[in-house]
Amino acid sequence: MIFLSVIIAAAANFAFGAVWYMSVAKPWMAASGVEVGEDGQPANNADPIPYITSFVAAVLVAGMMRHVFALSAIDIFGEGALAGFGIGLFLVTPWIATF
Image (cartoon, rainbow, N blue to C red; front, side, top):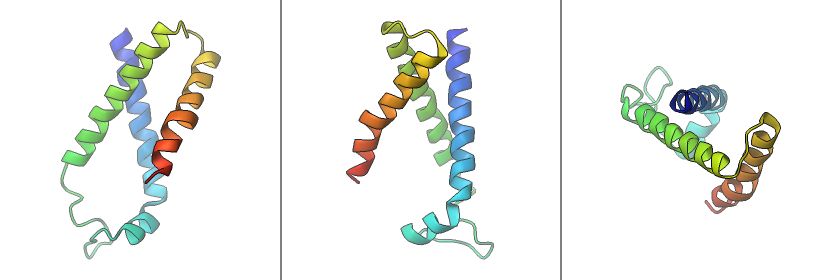
């Protein structure tokens, strides 16, 4: 059951990311200089490696967060949401802000 919850969390992360990046794809591609084909899509959009890598990374993050939550005795939704918010705000945001 633990492995299944990690896979479900990774799939939810992947789905949310897909919706998010589809909504900001055009400005992001323009700002980052991604080559686009005649159809307006990225020139290398047929390559599955970025999608596979992204899902594997999502599984690793979900697994590690599950491990940290288990060690911290976080076992209800509210505690998990607060801890996840804290991880995002105090660990991820400063790291992203440096780029």
